[in-house]
Length: 84
Image (cartoon, rainbow, N blue to C red):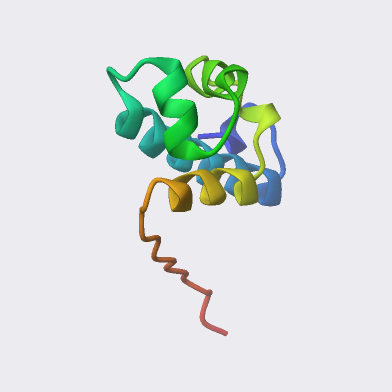
């Protein structure tokens, strides 16, 4: 998806991961007032606004993982490496 937009394969993979994490966070806080969501995720209300607006460039993978962790989420990582 992101590679089709001209991003390098590395940047496309990073954007894909951030988009997935942001989607999970938005689902988690759906319907909550922004102040309550900010408390749950351990961030400020303006960060929740940025999250809801999909401002992907303002979030690192680390920040998104920390927010999910603050909400009690358990993350699992799976990777595939090409065979040689």
